Amino acid sequence: MGVFGKMENINSFTQTFSSMVKFVNDKYDVCPQLKKRAMLTTKRIGALSGLRMEIHEHPQWIDEFLLEQGAMMSSMDRRMVRQWRDYSVGYDFYVMEHLADSSVFWSITDARKLYSVRGIGVPYRDVNRLKPPYGIVTMLYPYQGYIVTDGIDLPNKPFLKRSFREELLAAYHIAKKEFGIIQNLVSPSMENNTGRKSTIVQKPRVPKEMVPKYKEIADIISDCCDDLLDDAYEERFLWFLQKLCRRRPSPLESGSAKNWACGIIIAMYGSDKILSGILPLPAPDPDKFTELVEWFGMTERAVATLAGSVLELQGNTRHQKG
Image 1 (cartoon, rainbow, N blue to C red):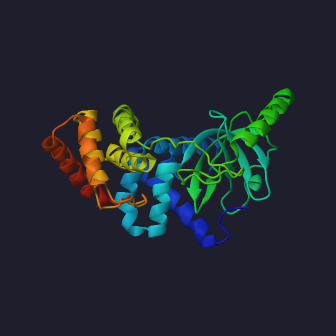
Image 2: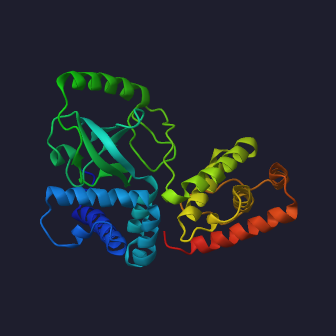
Image 3: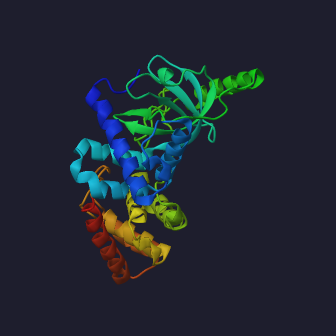
């Protein structure tokens, strides 16, 4: 079945998505041909698909959309767009089978990832009537606890040879039994249909040019959390790190990775400002601060200065929409 039973929900998704795409294309001129009103031909669908992928690769554009147009949106729509920014998945999939209430998409690039996908308003089987398995290029988005596709699909290996189909189906049944089917993109530990927890980690949503700096800082944060804290704190720190990577200009462009990791951890560990989308954590242990300072091998004064700078950035980030 489709996700949205009510027409207002369908309109909310499609209108918000269209507004975001138009905003990005008007501002960055990614696909000039889409600015002209015309019939939705195969060529235009290809251009729209390419534009959508560019948005996925540049999450800071979504931040700009929220900053400039978020005030005109409902809180539910703003949350929906933030989830698109943080959890959408692309691009190459095999559509393996149609179930009673969804269709199973299997990632071509990662055999561990199988997704339960629904269409917008109608079952996906009614969106694309090819007989599974077949390949497509598309994007998957979270919405109200489900995984949906916007229906902007391009064929990719739509007709498979019989021998390959048989091999693919055999491998699919093994993968489905081993890994299960992911039902929800948003939850950090995604439930699959086997009842086990999926350990798949979502790709960090940072601009391409910031990926090297993000990885450098994230590695230090992860090492520190492994030694002294836990996964819940690591998730919180990395979430904020991604926010800083998406700022324009990003403050992370200057300064050492060690200093940034230290500032983020010390500031956020003791902060009583619970960031949007992150669950509250236990009260900080005063003794842990000393251990954290020693872990970084800095003086308390230096650490306090770094943490103060991050807390100032945290306040600025909280006042940005999105």
